Image (cartoon, rainbow, N blue to C red; front, side, top):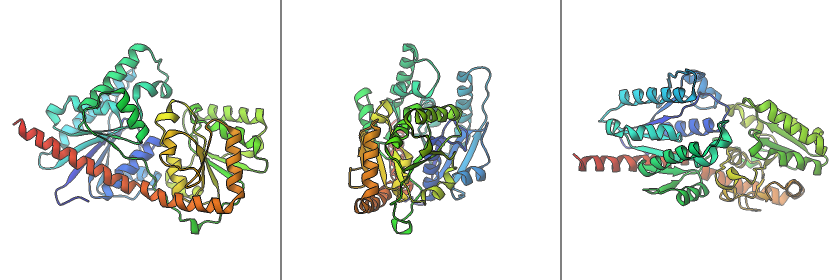
Length: 409
């Protein structure tokens, strides 16, 4: 993919590694695949709470590579999140300045809007092209993920930061067409926007698994209220003789989220059908996915579901020959075509979810056909393919930035 001239990609994200959060899985797999294709990748992470490089790679089941470096950055928390975030930004700028090399093609790629904004503001000094990957519109979704009140002033500040990045980043990438459409309908964007979907590192051929004629259902993911897992819990009351294995947890509100789902199960009479099996490290997930299951993706019809979701579990189910029953929502329809590579049900409707599960379990021909098609389609969403497209964007951004810089000399 790369010629003899080296390319170095900096990927800053203000998070500890490893982490049970899906964003860490997406980031580390992207970085690893970029490194496997020949780029030198420096993942800049929060030092506090992070493990050593080899322990991180083992957690995610990734190979060691001299091309992938993980640099822990010091932070300080002196009573406020604002100071804490600022300390990470200052550490990041110090690392970027120290590593800046005029003789090497270097770009910055990130999904962290504050990191992107900071580096763009310092571009006069760093001369570093910035590629920002949009996963959601931050001023829309930030209240969902934080405990900070969504005051008009805060929303305006978040929106202004986003607009600054969208107008000045060298390239923009989104993870879905729906995300791109929301971006373009809300903000002024100065340049092209590339859609590069998420992916899966896990592949299990259908012929290596027993046919999923069983009544075992699978959910992998977290249990946040906006995820829609309660729809699957309620559906189990309509599926006597079926069992649902749920894998997830290891986050600060997991216990209360699981308790909420248990209470819903008790109310609708599905308690005996549920099994909460805890969190599985990403590097060990294939041990679950090799079993015979029907995979459930009960995403809710809410702001995230209508515009921004890109569930890693969907790609993992497909790649590991787990037939899928998923919510009929726009981002999911970009991946799943009903009765071709999966089945869709009306989001939030447990009766329709149960009906589609029963169809799949009762029809071996349908089940085998969509499983094989999904496995073939999953190869379009490998991290290698994702990394190749990111490299194309990175090289173009570097060339355009170099050309612009030469014009201003």
